[in-house]
Length: 194
Image (cartoon, helix red, strand yellow):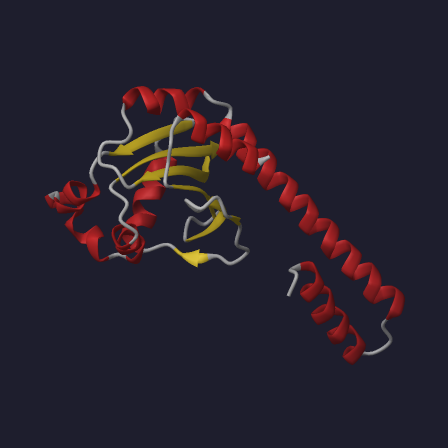
C-alpha cells in the first residue's frame, strides 16, 4: 500500500526522496516508517531515533496547533537554515543529513490523529523551489492520512499477533527459564528477520 502510494505521488509530484516518519506518543523519538530512495529501493526501519530537542519542541508546537493536518514547504534549505530564527538547526544531525545528501527543498505533510501528531510524509528534492502552495493543497487533499493510519494499524496488529504467538509458543513448549530465553531470542530473531 505504501509503495503504491509513493509511486502515485511520484506521478503527481516528482521527488528525489520520499519518507513517512512515525512519531512516538511522547514526541521524543521518531522512526523511518517507510522510505524510497531515488533508485526506487524501498525500506522501513524498526529502530527509533531520538528527536533533537529543537525539532522535538517544534513538533510539539505543531501537535498543539489543533488542525488535523498541516503541510509545510521549504523552498530553499540553504536560505531556510541561514534565517536568524533557524540558524541553530544547521548543526542538527537531521539537517546535516539533508545538506549532505544535496536536498534543496521539501514538502512535508503532517498526519494528526486523535489530537496528536502521529506521522509526517515528506518529499525532498535536489531542486530549489520544487514545491509550491498548489502542491501543498494537492497533497493535503489526498487521503494520505488514512493511508498512513491504515499502515500503522496494520503493523501494530502484526506486532500484537507476533507477541501472542511467541507467548503461546513459550507456554506450550518451555519448562525452564533457559528454554524461555531461547524461545524469546529465536522468536524475536525470526520476527525481525535477523
